[in-house]
Image (tube, rainbow, N blue to C red; front, side, top):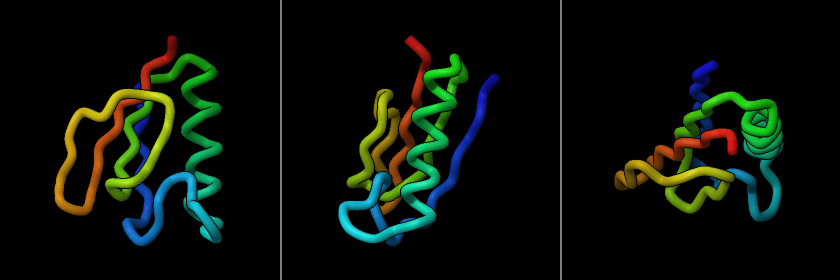
Length: 68
């Protein structure tokens, strides 16, 4: 299944300090990828997740996560 996750642009995914929403999005993206789904994460430019960066915009980064 192809899934898009959109995160607030105020904090990285996963957050470096506090960020409840961003932490939950990080957990969801990582587990969905582990289950074999293709996940696209729209988040701040300093976000990190398993996948490849496809576009790096000024404040938003699109990260495609494909199951291995």
